[in-house]
Image 1: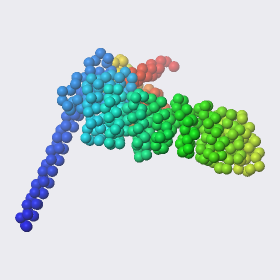
Image 2 (image 1 turned 45 degrees about the vertical axis):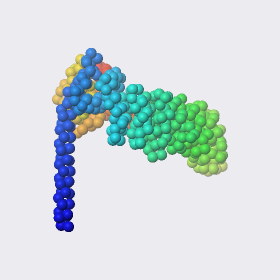
Image 3 (image 1 turned 90 degrees about the horizontal axis):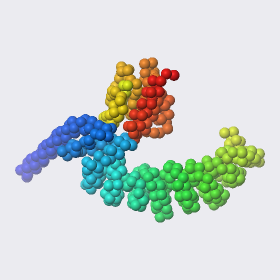
Image 4 (image 1 turned 90 degrees about the vertical axis):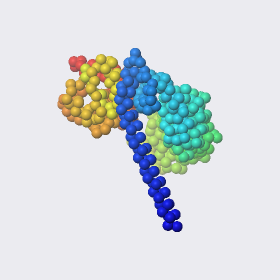
Length: 344
Length: 125
């Protein structure tokens, strides 16, 4: 028994020693690699800067060592984030020549999810169509962060062919990762505006549609306005509010009639009526004055009445006349709201 | 004309420096805000290209010190920044930044802006 215990302690001690030795060796190797990389860096940076600035300069030679290629790729990727114009185009061309895009596409197959995500992010920065097939594969990655990074990179390519894949990936992540989903949809909306229609359609998740509506409102592209107008008929109140707010921010005159329908429908939610009233004020068309005046005087919810008064103040003469009439209302609260709106 | 390029990223510093040298300027470099301030006080600079986010002292702080010093109060400053948020831009302009360029930026455009600023300063009022 004692012999067995002694043997176990001996084996265990040996394992601990081996583990410690392994850690020390790993650290030494990694330190040496870091020092070598740091030593290679300045010369590569100078070579790269000279190439980008001087059109007649030869591109940096492909380093013979794997470490050298990695350092050059790192330097180029750091620079690409900060540059635009001719220098950026030259940098993308150089990365293609150096085989960096192929290397990054291979990294999308790595077993390490962090490597896959970084590769997708880097490919997004390079924005080369050569990576599209690999990014389509990456958009089905089991790791959600890698998947979204690939979807965002695809969105940045701005092609219709990839929109469905991009929206599929964003929609599947919308509930748990709203921020990353918004970033993907923003990239899609900025590079291929028509692609966002799919993100808003019925059949997509509510979380995804809400984010898509917010993204459209943020982008304020007039071509998106019909999409938001279509959403005003949706049965989900949050979605209707987001769309109404977006239309107000865009100051889209074509949205006046659909917004008036919300304001005038007693069955619509009070929050939607309030936001639609506010949006009508932002658009500033005096045609909305009669409906807003009715809202101010008769709506059952005080927030809606308050928004109606503030909106009327933005409608010019017609709005001001409506507020003057409301200021003589027998109802004290209506008089107060109208007076406040007139004074601001 | 001597231009100071202050940026903690060596790659960007060298890129901007290379562009300015190619356009006929002399360049001196600084790797952080404190060094930028020391160089600005000791060298006869025509302009400064200043990154906003730097170690030891950020770009805004450098501008504040430069504008308080009679020797550097009129020195043209082009600020490079990763943020184009209205508050940041306005904050920089209020402090006395002459030009504001958000990253990603074009080194050629930066060089043109520096050129324009230095020429404007050289012209008699």
